[in-house]
Image 1: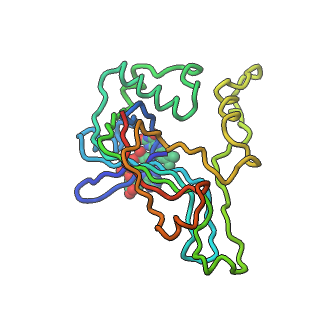
Image 2: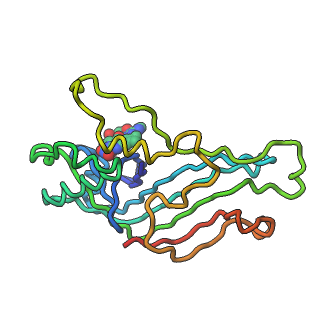
Image 3: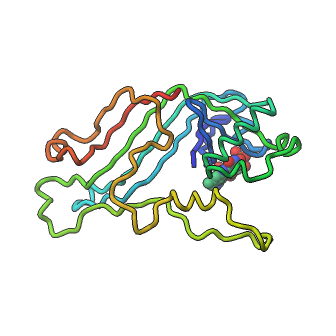
Length: 235
Ligand SMILES: Cc1cc2nc3c(=O)[nH]c(=O)nc-3n(C[C@H](O)[C@H](O)[C@H](O)COP(=O)(O)OP(=O)(O)OC[C@H]3O[C@@H](n4cnc5c(N)ncnc54)[C@H](O)[C@@H]3O)c2cc1C
């Protein structure tokens, strides 16, 4: 899920929405009546953020509690896609981002459906990424406190698919659904480390600025990655 931030008449909005990505372009879609999409099609400055939460970081002190996460904040401008072919391709990219392989299994949108749907192309002009991994970073003097500290890993998992009540009796489960279940981690396999990829993986990391303090850094071995922020490039 992406959160799209924009300002209309001085009022900021942050709206959750699906997205798809191809290089430095994000695709957003929805009802042609949507305030968000009607505003974005004017080319107004926009900010899109995507966050993945990987764990709760529980320290011995209240102060050092944190979360393990990967997040991207991207700035850019948008335009409305008018061409039917480009629109269908953008919708395919969104669909493939949501669940790979689904587009080829379903009836694709017809002209009427396309006319009821607005599709926006958001070009990433500047982006920053930030992630935190690893254990809590308690002050040395707190490490012997009789308090449990560590990480509760969190991950997106999926349950058993529930067929629509109108499903034909002879209908087999879709390949895309079976594949989706196979790829998502099962609850028992969730570990304290994340997959290391950003919500939408940049082409290049331009600068890495560790935000962990020097004192904390000195205490960490190289196997404990630091919290870091960076400027990233998408193309
Ligand atoms: C996981 C997820 C995925 C979504 N994917 C899409 C998508 O791909 N395309 C799409 O068009 N819409 C999507 N939506 C719905 C989207 O968040 C908006 O509700 C919708 O686009 C209408 O936006 P609008 O600008 O017209 O809001 P408006 O109708 O102008 O909003 C009216 C009021 O409702 C509030 N509001 C708007 N959206 C929400 C919300 N989701 N939750 C709580 N309050 C809200 C606004 O702040 C405002 O006060 C998704 C929502 C979620 C949670």
